[in-house]
Length: 412
Image (cartoon, rainbow, N blue to C red):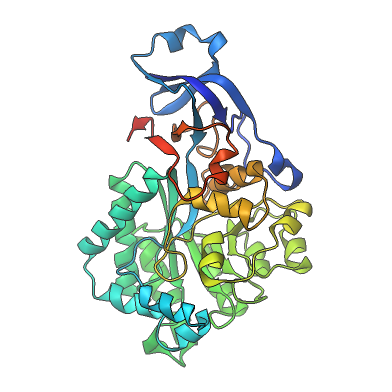
């Protein structure tokens, strides 16, 4: 049991567990000034104002003095691809020269470039490189992360990726969710035979993934040049038979129907969403699907920005995640995502904090245990360096404002 005392401001305080905030309520952010936080048995046990420090808190065996500092719930990064073989900075030069994402893919770059490299890399080497990335994002305040497969694109290597994710779950204090993304692209050996590849996913990959209990979710890249709505439906239905809830890559490159098919099959989230119109918003309203925007990818690729304000004005919630991957978003820094939410998408700091904590926890099915300072939730929090206001977090981009991270109630 340990106590954090003299907290300048305790951020995202919720006395009762709520799943997410939507619409105008995303502007609400409950805080407690001059506060204390008591952690016991790896959980948030109690909190309050320093003027009313409980007797139990006074008996804490370990005490951290956070004078001048703030305490936030850790970021929840609900969309990443951090198990990969190598970086792709050469394609970055192609982007600078003006080639589009689709043009690079047609030249054998993009996802297929990562596929070839991953197939040639051992499971142990993949694990070690992914572990370094996990440690990196932890130091920036991320306490929960969803990790996708999708760079194997055959049964053997998709399973290899998912086994790496399982090893990361076993070793790391971060909360980790695994997503099977065999439908990330059509591998080169199936060029012109896309239906056969979809059949392979349905008839072989999904049963084997489920048989080993390797995934929490199933994802499909339902977009222009990738998988059709009809193919997506077939794969989602098969995944759902095995208890894998859908998540969808949708509308990154065009209006694809990906949002609507995600809602139809009760996807936990639909992600990217550069192209969203009235039909997509109408579909998402009154659904249980979280619209998730990935600012890093749009920034890195120079894409149009998702109409976040229009979606919130319509009453929708928004989550934000990093999309950490080697090709289109080579950063897992959720502090930077928080800043991009404000700078590029004109979200208020309160909206951006909700999008990267509570709402993104929902997008990885963790909002009952993570995403806010609530009694009984897992103690995943970070202590900032001395900062003047919580608005300073998105304002001061580019530097690490996290001083200490606590995961599962343990100082890291």
